[in-house]
Image (cartoon, rainbow, N blue to C red; front, side, top):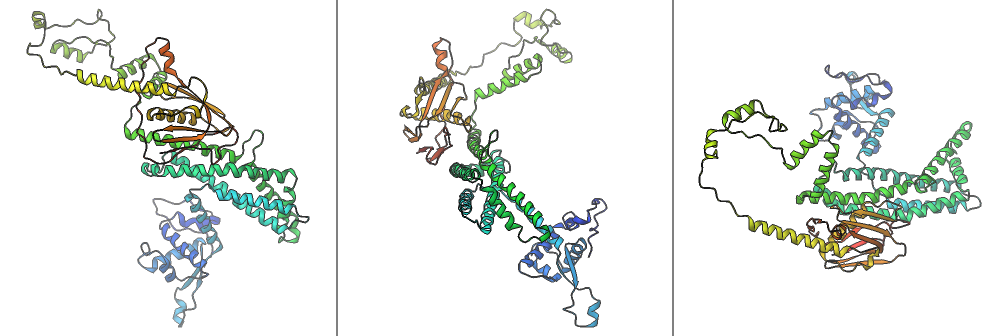
Length: 568
């Protein structure tokens, strides 16, 4: 059978001609494409059971009961179309011939062609790649370490065994390829999770704790095992042992080539193994002007944790309906800066604050109708404006409205007094928290002492702002609180000391750091300026459960024990 034609499409939507070489993919773009896919899957399933030929009734029985056609004739038509496209081959079914008349009946058995099997393999790979979410394979790191050590043992022999070298390099390449592909797919799905693409908010909130723990565990393994892998690669390359190993693997791979092509096959195999080793070395070992992929992956994973926490904080604030005046004023300031001209800025001012310019009085109905028909601009000076017609009643009595008993004015003094007390109390609590956290200079975190709940919540927010600006390789960072009242400077120490901050709800412990917290509002108060303090409202504590915050350190990134934990 030749594959030169395709199933006719409706006249309203003509299909573009498909090259003959790609005719086995025609069944993807024609009507009834799902039926064709099911038929081809039935043949693949039969091939796995070592069944070579299938009759139409066998294919019909193998289809899903909920989506199979009403009769077997539809399956026969689909089989004939697949034969036309080159996916299947049809042979006369002579096994069931019992009379001369049976020779004249259309009876065929069908089997997969090489082109049809290759097309289904390509479609299976396509579906697998699209459906892959990826994972961070810490086990693959252990396997890579094991295979590198095995290579060191093999190359140390007087006469290295080509079979052992080939197997070790093959397993090493396979595990490294899985690690790189799955890491790339996982980081892509993680970014979609951070952006809340194709994910429900409730599912994200339930998933984020396990995701953060998963990231931290892989980062710890990548720090520990990645450095070990880099050392093993350097040991192999420094002693010039990589080339002989790759040559042994190339010879082993080209052993079955034809005699006239043996030399070329060995050269091609060596180039392939050299490219694989170069990719492995560049993934784990940094060079001048180029960071390794492992370091970049570690940086992205570390940076995704604060991003996840920021998304959680934004979702919680959105649920609580929190209003941040400082953020509103900053957004308004950006709008003023982006306004194209002064007229636009004046309109923005009037809309934002409701402070309109003076308007001319309208006294009677005639004046009102006249101004509606021909309005007077608000920017017109009083002396240049058209005169107003004042009602005679206004001239006689001095008032246009009829006099009567004035309405009773509600006394809101008590409510205002209560609001003022609450505002003063919150301002005092915020000031006490700032005074308690102000260090007056760099001090160790271990000397911070015990903190009350309000001061501890403010400290956690400052620490989160500082960690959000931390990047790999940094030893110190500085950040300012969202309301601009506090500034924190955090410096990593390398002496291995531990700090504990006691609170009524638990102990916050982890590696010691040098910390400097500055109350920016104190400078204005000392200068005599009246600096209003925005009321500080501490957010509600989360439900009692262990919380983990990773703090980067100088030199190698965090070890498993280098974490700040809060046990409540």
